Amino acid sequence: MTQPPPTASRVPVCAVIPCWKNSDTLERALQSIAGQSALPARTVLVDDGNAPDDQRALGEIASRFPQLSPEIVRLADNQGPSSARNAGWARAQERYVAFLDADDLWHPRKLELQTALMEAHPDVELSGHRVTVLQAGAMLPERPTGTGRVQAPGRALLFIVNPLATPTWMIRTDARVRFCAGKRHVEDHLLLMELVARGGQLLVLDLALAALFKPALSRTGLSSQLWKMELGELDAYRRLRAQGLLARVPAAALSALSLVKFLRRVAIVKLLR
Image 1: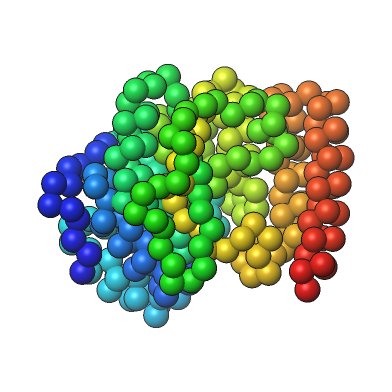
Image 2 (image 1 turned 45 degrees about the vertical axis):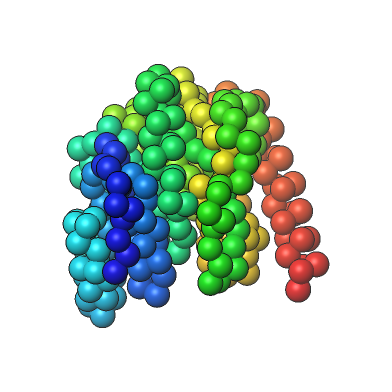
């Protein structure tokens, strides 16, 4: 059992992990939460319609972390990451929510440093930070890499590329947006674009405080489904346009650029084979 540092305090954060067919990596993710220098006040695991065997495994793994007292929210069927994250978010009573995917992990000082950043900027609704891509079995360095500088991402660039992986987010519980229910691809980028379009403020901390275990163009997982990801991005622009958050000409230009990026991704994947 992973024990928190002896001096670990609690911060007003609800940590949310969507869980679906990932009992082989969930313990590693929970260990990275239990090892935080500042523990979350609440930890929520969302059972996203798992089969009975996976439900039992989830419960067994959660029981190994009594210091986190993980709550398990069960969805009747698999609804995807957007709905799962929203379900965990709905249980939050703390000021902030931080999302971690079950196959990724956090640096031990992630919650400590990012909570301090959010507290120092009460007008900011969401902050993120850098990530490191690791091979299986590797760990983040003890000292996070980066300059530690804080900056606001460019608004125009944010509509072209997603600068923040979801496991880097810390968002105010009362933020003006939620994930688009049922959306399975590009749901995180859509939320960021909608938040900015509605006047929300974002900050990025230049420190690698989370690790992902697959590259952006992995041949496995959602990112390997290039056409579905492309359709998800085009759908995101369509939704912003329908809500009046994106004008017709910029929406058309962004959609055209998205198709160009898709063709580039396809070419890169072919070269990697």
